[in-house]
Each structure stands twice: as structure tokens, then as C-alpha cells.
Image 1 (cartoon, one colour):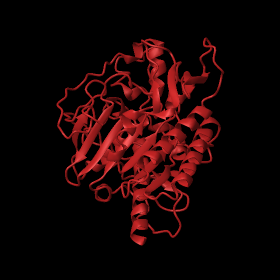
Image 2 (spheres, one colour):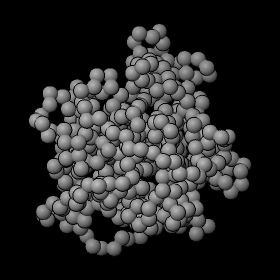
Image 3 (cartoon, one colour):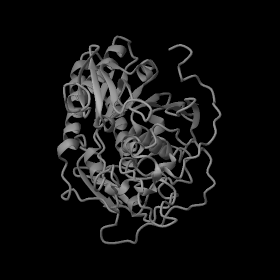
Image 4 (cartoon, one colour):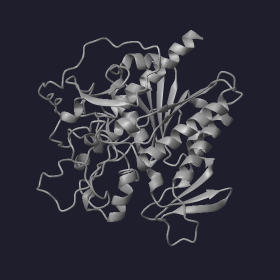
Length: 437
């Protein structure tokens, strides 16, 4: 790993970067990139101290549908399918807010950016067959004591990790002990109270590739059979890897395999075989999971747990690159919105490839592959995105002709916190299985 390894334990000072308030006036090509990773090509804010005096928004008024059962969480003999259920009102609200957590990206601070409604904060996910307990930050830290968890992938990986850090920080303060010098896309936090480490690796393709940019080609380049060494070279440091990817595969792309171009997506001026993104997406995940197995096998007790988070649908109303919005303020009921089309197919591929990896690793020992299935519960939350409030007070001077909207990422706090509630239940189940062995 050499001297360039980012995980040397040292504090790195940094300064707050100012997010321009005029993003909505950028050229359309910047807006195009924005859908797949809003501001991913610009530095993230790294503020760790807040001076806002905002208090948590008041809960919605009680109603016949807003009561919360005080029944203690039940223990079920069969594993719970957390992917199927419905969103129900919960007057308790989130564990944290934008003033109490210092790891939230500026564009996800919906409350302090002026979002006027607060009802989206008062829902909980109710699985159809069991209960999903409220997140227990101390329990989570105890279960990952002395461990290193890496979040690898796109900006939804970052979004989920920042949510997790916010919930954990309600009982213990993390230290930012590493950040990459220029782009802030690689970071690590350490919880001294439990010697737990959480790392973020920016790798939207998971494999090697070159991201499209304003200065370079308009398409991505992906090498489907070569895992990205930027994160894979550090596998021996990890006890757990959480993988998140998908949205960048919808962009124009050129695909390589065995050193040669095998096709392209939406690159009409290039003389390549036309193909959709489903086959490359499957190949990328298979390469990733196979590489983890090959690199970790035969190393005794130095195994690894791998969690693949399923695709999180966007909720643009209208064309996302033509002033599309996400203006809803309530979740869909499960009977209102079916999982279908592209969202369903991507989820299916991810689940199949995890099962394939399980079969490969079944006789090796030291591996656990699981799916963190969030697609259906995310699909039902069109109200949970920043929308125009990815920028501070976008309507302070009236309604502009064009307002940039983020209908991909999630407000913090917000529905994405539920992903980490399910994540905790997965870890608790593994702990119970280990005790039973």
C-alpha cells in the first residue's frame, strides 16, 4: 500500500469550502452531471462546527394515523424481510438534527436550507411481517468495536455513511482522521470510545474507470474486468464493506473488457456496438465481489462481511435535466407505487450477483455476503429529497426561471436513516448466529 495509503492515523487540518449559491445558473452540462452525483466533481463541505440556532421542527399534529405503538419489539423465529412494508406516522421524529451533527453535506441540510415543511421527518418504516426497532447507536458501536467499516461507491454511499455518523454521534463523538487533499472524496472517521473506524471511498463504477467531466469526454470509461485499486488495495484493513452504485451507469459510457472496447451506451458519434447498461452493471458487481473473494481467501480468520445496498430510485417529476422537481410532501402508500422497470431490474441484478458470490464463497469460510434491500422503501419516499433546498433559501428573492433540484440524494435527517436501522439489525443477526455456533 506504500506511502500513498490514505489510512495513516494523523489529523489533517482543513478549511471550510464555500458552496456557491449560484449553482442553478450553471451550464446544462453541469446540471447533467449533477443528477448522478450532485457536486461530486467539486469539494464537499467539511464543516465540523455549527453556529446555527435552529431547533428541531415541531412534530405534525396528532391524528388517528400518527400514533406509535409502545409495544416492545418482538423477537421472531424467522428472519424478517425488511424490504416489504409501509411508511407509518411516528411523532418521535429523528435522533439528530442539522445543528447537532457536523458531518452533513451542505446540500442535504434541508431544514437549515429553508425547507418549510417538516412532515417528512415523522415517518417510520413498518415491515409487513415484523417490527423494525428504532436505531440504537450505543448497540451499533458495541457491535463494531475494534472494527473498520468501509463504504465504497457513489454519492449514496456517502449519504448513508453521513447518516450513520450523525446517529452514532448522539452517544459518541467521531474524529475525522483522514481526508483526501483536494476532492474530499476519501475520508475516515474514528470513534475513540470503541476504536471503531468508518471510511469512505469514492468509486462510482466500483471498477477502474474514468469519469466524464466538463473538460474531458462526455462519456464515462469503464474497465469491467478490473476492480478499482483505489479501494481494493486496502481490503486487508476492512472488517466490513458496504457497496453502493448504480446511478452513474445511466450516463453515456464506453465499456472495455480484456483490453478492448465491447460496446457503449448513448455514444452515438462513436463507432461502437450499442448496448444498454444492464450487462455492464452485472459484470461490474461480479468483478467486485469475485475480487473480494480472491483477495481475502486463505487468510485465516481475516475474513470480511460484504453488504450490497440495492438501487435507490430517483423521484424527478418531469425530465430531470429540464427543471424536473420532487415536490411531494408525503410518502406513497405501497399500493400507490409499484416497483417496476429499470428500478426493479437493477435490484434483481444486484440480488442475483450477491447470491452468486455467496455460492462461490460458501466453502471458503470467513465471508458473509448480504443484500441491504432498500429499493422498495426508498421508492415510496418522494418527499425525502432536498429538491430545490439543496441550496440555501432558493426562493428568498422570488421564484427563479430555473431552479436546480436534487431528487436523488436524501435530506439529513430523513428516510435514509432507515437504511442504517436495517443495517444494524443485520449486524445483530450475525452476532446472534456467531453466539449460536
